[in-house]
Length: 274
Length: 289
Image (tube, rainbow over all chains, first blue to last red; front, top):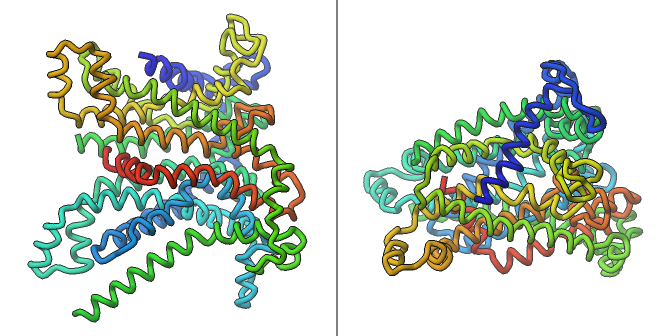
């Protein structure tokens, strides 16, 4: 099968090469030289890479819960029987999903612009202190996660709406007869029946959050003072700017282990489903 | 009771409308800014009323970046990848769903386990494989001497076209189809290829649309892979082409916004036409796990 050949050539073999390279000192020019676990030791002790790990985790902690809970609430609102224009709402929510991360970054660069941007304009008009947004050390990660939450939540809304629509209406009707209402129905019927969907959304969001790169590359280049450098940004810099391919491969395996942990949870869910 | 119900209704609507405004406002603001002259924008960055309305910005940007060229490149990357995905992934999914062959389950589990490998692990080695691909791009049979598939359309398309996820998705879909139609065709003497091509494949249309749309959108919006594989400006897709505005003077916000919107428009057009397939596709992915 051609599919197997392609997967072998562009997934399996590269993984093995990356694993091999992670134990070498390789700069494209010249031959790889075996250095043992030095790259891993470097990665785990390097202040910049540690900072990147910290930033990425911080980003994930903001991005995942806010996005998932928000999308769930929106989907819940959309699937109420009295809601009209459900499709129109979904189209509006989905527009940011269609936009490339590059385009989204450009739009938000303008929104966050410290002197002329609309956000600081609004703050000034309200006589509130201005913010440095993506140019401030403490505000850059929350600012970036605001963009990606804005960009991605519509996707989760569609998934949650599909999951919610799959719950038989009779269950709610029966619960109503028993006197249940509002949040007790959400807690006792919706959430348990939506478990698989929710776990899928949560796990894929966690995995995606650990891979954040494009917004960082375009908007901040990891700055100010590495306050927004992330794991993938460090992999990119080490591999293609510093030509430290071995070190970058080791970093990519650190990322791999983190993602593997969450993927295994996801696979376990699929297994249970099957 | 009736009153609180109406209050609830109102609350839900207010919430949805509020979120809708939040998702639209960045676009509306960038459209508004794109219609200001650079000078006016500098003097009145917060005004919602551009004076004069500078439609000319949308002409000017075409002299600043090669939109046509970038657009064609995006189309070749996204279209090429989608076509290759459609040729290669469905038969594989079909084989795993329907054919009995030795080691089928082991191979399938191996493919599933490839899904766990993040694409960032593959960046460097795939770059090296493309660079050292034998007999292309000036390389000899040992893969040295030239640049291989680097800085070519193939370098973009080949490594990204076949994903374990697409094979998995196709297999799951084929499994949901009843076997009986295929079996009666087999009794009528149809060849295996005909059964796949004329019976199974048309029935799998929802899954095929889902993988096409997401292959296309993935490539159209891709940034990191073109960033690594391409060197020449004339091969750059829109996502990279947009960057020339960043290199320019930073006061040109209206022009940057105009260019950004223009690069976004084609995807919105595709969405306008295939909207229901997008939603079906996402729902399908969310529920087929």
